[in-house]
Image (tube, rainbow, N blue to C red; front, side, top):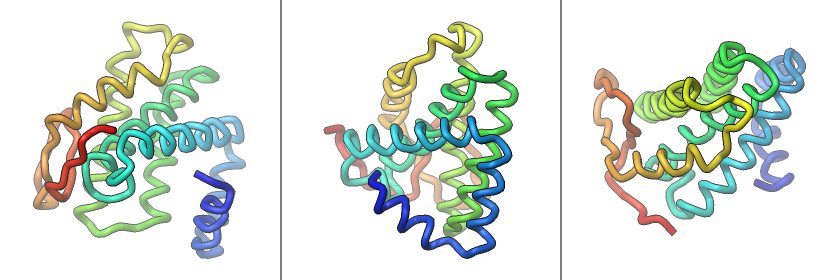
Length: 174
């Protein structure tokens, strides 16, 4: 993720959506900075592990969305309560889906994989003090989930604690 990429993303937003983004950012500046850092770190890890699919609709994308939510939760929990971090993470990742709309099936996939990342963080929370979480805790498990990924074909399908994709193309890990 480069400054040019960030600029191009912001430039693609309408004035209304840009204002929404800045308002949510100013509503909680510390969480916003931590979210940006989590986004950057997620992008770098996903690009390294899934150079071909992290920005498509395959396993790399599913992994990226789940990791992104886990890392936002991890960083925000270091400065606030798990409940506040969960509310923020849901709000900011939902807003991302609203600002950058996708086709309905793609949206379902992204929102589901986001939830998997948040749920995984919450599963770990009782066993590890939130100050001691590390990125590696999430990468390993979420990579394992990509080995048993499910394909979503209809909007009305439901899934549990598993990553989902739209297309069947799988990428082997780098």
